[in-house]
Amino acid sequence: MIRTEPAKVRFSVALLPCAVLIVLVMLNAWCFGEDASSGPNQMALLLSGVLVVTLGWILLALSYKDIEAKAIQSIVLAMEAVLILLTVGCLIGLWILSGIVPSMIYYGIQLFTPAVFLPSACLICSIVSLAVGSSWSTMGTVGIALLGIGRALSFPDPLVAGAIVSGAYFGDKLSPLSDTTNLAPAVSGSELFTHIRHMLYSTIPSFLIALLIFTGISLFYTPGAYNNAAVSEILDGIAASFSVRWYLMLIPLLVIVMAAKGIKAIPALTIGTLLGAAAALLFQPQRFLSPAGESLSALEQYKMILLTAYEGFRLESGQPLTDTLLSRGGMAAMYDTVSLILAAMFFGGAMEATGLMERLAQAVLSKVRGIATLIASTIGSCILCNIFLSDQYLAIVFPGRMFRSAYQHYRLDVRNLSRALEDGGTLTSVLVPWNTCGAFAAGVLGVATFAYLPFCFFNLINPVVAVVLAAFHISIKYEEEKPAED
Image: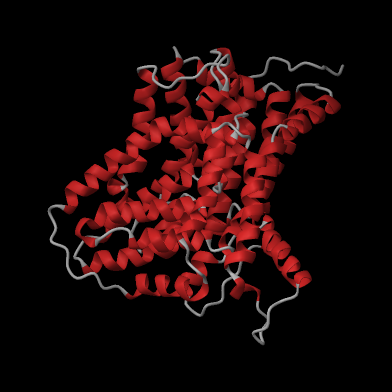
């Protein structure tokens, strides 16, 4: 007999697909390293999802059509996030072409002095990461330059690396251009700008505390001469390739204002993208020249704008650090994250349709005694996923699907869940040596993960601050509250 409702399942059966997923992800991390999220982990999620469907169909005697329909319905819930990600890809490419992102980086690097090197390094990385939406790009470019400055000033490498990682992940966490910042609300059902605004409650105090600690440490050091070729290379490369103008930063400021006014993410980002295209034509005419130095025709300029929006911006200035930092963006660059979201939503939807997710949630939530322990359990689960699944995306996706019903039970707005996913999932990924983020940071900075871990003050403090806020019932939002009131 075919059932239409999930039967009561044993915990071991519910745990089986998760165990298979963990094994596959760990195998992928060993085989593919930092490239595990560029295809292998998507396949791991799909195969695990197929296992869930098979268990539901054969072992639990559920209707295959019902399981399929609910899994597809779960995928549909993520379509807004997919559209946002594709728009963000276009925006990144055009904001680089227009000089917006290069101007933000150029002025950000020049804004601070080496007299307070550690907080300056942290702030510079936060500005760059906010501008490009990527902690990896920030660490692999500006981070390397700042590490060289730190050595010249006799700062220990692990300490400088901690400041770099702290700043890079602050920007990554709050930037609407970041894939994790889009993934968390997609999984939880929140809205992008509502999610970002709600994160400020835990993120800003944590970052300020980290800056105070870095400032205190810097006071014990006597800085040397500020002379680093890597920083000069980035500044010279930007100045030679773009017309750097401070007023270009009014465009991202406008997007921020629209977000603060409650305008939805897709229209706000679309306006920002169109303004980026217009700014490129107006303020970067040198980017629209033929190899012979002649201006491109209107049709060729149109083609260049579209190709940049789709394929991303590619800089060939002859200066490797600048080229690496600014060669990114494009709709196509988002396909790895989009495919990961779709595969994860399929897996999560199948787990929910078969009742396996509910069974797992019951086991975890049996220890929950209120809102504070619920949020703490969410953050703790994200940390465990970073350790055992070795991937920050899965550390957001899996707990997000598992705990969503519990937040509904306590009538909590989903923005509480999306914030907890980032407080625990995004920030702790770089602290695990075998996680893709930890492996990447250790590789590009040349500092072992466990060496820089004690100095990643922001990454360590933020989950604690989030739990404290929950314990004192600060910034907790309920379902009946409107997102615009945040």
